[in-house]
Length: 231
Image (cartoon, rainbow, N blue to C red; front, side, top):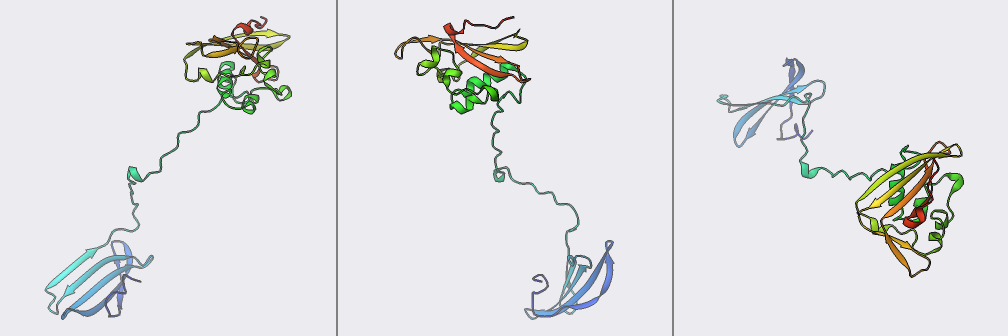
């Protein structure tokens, strides 16, 4: 033990006694410290062999005495970690509203619109397993699906919008139509050729609850959104 291994004199067991309710061994040694005789007595806890108290007497006439009482090693220690040492907690990713996790057509439609800035696979998650779209043509009705750029809603990212949800039934199936009205004409709506576009602020997402979950069935923009749901 490094604590007991200082100086050159071996320790001698003096006896055992109780110190503040703890059983302790008492050991002692005497040595010369710069021509001055020093006697050191140490109380060691019997259970854990931890120091409890130390008394050092300098000189044969015991004119100088130094007593040290050590901390209670069994007491709880309150450690305060400085803020700069803490690892920052990453901000969790916003939870997407998917058909299997949400019963709100509006929330699912909003998440679906946000997914269209990604890839086609991300958009496919909003369709039922037995009605998975094979191409953008299955997401947007003709003629939009036949024109490049028909699925581009990236111009509306960060633009304020209002949502209007309408519900109804058709063929015994509950259906919903969620209308997005953007604050600006951010939608780039293709017309009848690749080089003709019209700006628009209206998008619609159609959903149905045929499987017990709200799945997207299709989406369309502006002038192509005149096919509503039956009430």
